[in-house]
Image (cartoon, rainbow over all chains, first blue to last red; front, side, top):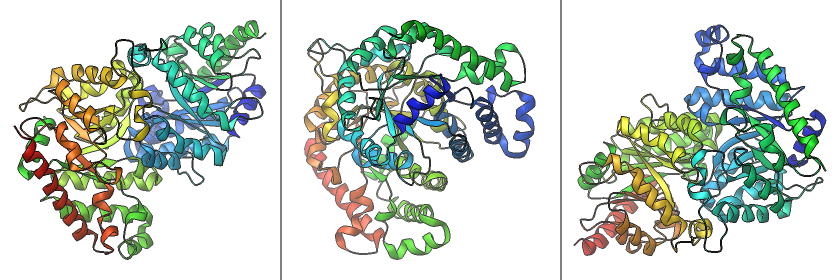
Length: 296
Length: 296
């Protein structure tokens, strides 16, 4: 099961971090991008940039999250780049999350699931992010594939953005919030796929920007692994994350994109590989210090 | 504005129908698919099938809805087929809806919007379906593009599937349902883009399978155009739709996919073009009869 593999990869690296490849051409140092753009356009430069980062960070970071929007943005060339980045990440042994927030009615959810989680998925992910607005029959096609292939999903519960609460925090007639009702269903959807470490193939997206709600959800969803976006550029720091981990320091993976892939912009260097490595080590240390205080 | 163009195209054709190109290789008559598959694989057959239908139906149907999941399913070849189908639909003058249910935090929503609604969008749609679970800051990037380019979105409000109510129908503390709260926000998001015919560039997806809720939403959202999925294979008939239209018979477009593109399977013929034309005319007549009784 990929959920076991994810947990073991995090233990091995002592680092619950996912490298977010939300790569835009503007993020790439001009000196590196130029020759690739001249030969194959922006998508070719993004591909080469991703490859360099993937090769450089594998001793530090166990997991990669690819935000598919940035590849769709580049059209068919972008989708070829996506496929190449997926292949490179898999070849290098990363656990691979495709962040696509897909969701639709059953028949269409089946098609999406086949595209990312099926046996012969063209864009094969270990995990896919899923939007649960359609309810159970829009999510079960993904779960069926997970049961069969050992892959997993992360369903949106509490998103990291400022207005995420607009619908997610609506108070319902029984006093609970909408996201808490979603959380309970996500927890139930995962019951049939609990792996060796006590976590299910059906995980939850919980914004690191809402630490209190994250800690409450951690208590209420003991078998649900969390994907935590919002670290770094979105404003959450390591201290916000602690409550989303369990008593042994497991139970979550922290996604960081701009803070890692744009680290060279802060230091004003074109050597993006060294800048990203330094930031990845700094982030690992920061999270590790916070977690060592948290582990009971 | 594309919302005006959509309304005018429906008036011209006297037919509020969108042809749903949710094309799977299994839907295509083997005799037609084989030569294309031999030369260019499944995606090539889907492309050719779509092209035949688009050319054959343009005198009857004003609008096309492409469900992107079925193209992602075929990987990079599928995305090339998607692009070709988009180009063909535009060339033939259809109003084009890309049904992608995209949604994410602001920065990522911007990328998705650029991919489908931006000035140089690689997969340029007249309308895009959007999932509102992230709230306003996840939807406004799409609306900003609509304001600038005249394109539009349809935000999910009440979906057509059986378990759509699982979260959407949750009763909130003020007695309203979650989907009604979403509906009110969708209505507000549209206020800045109301066109000549009184409808906004921000439309709503309302499942034709829930006629009562559809009729209530019609009353509450006088400036919101509806995209109605669920007709045909999902169980809704023309009589279910009437309440989603306004007093003049405008205000909504009905999407039908399997009932139109698989019409040849019902009649047992390989001549899918004639079968789809007959079904398209039957559907047009049925809706028109129901609406003529409804127009006040």
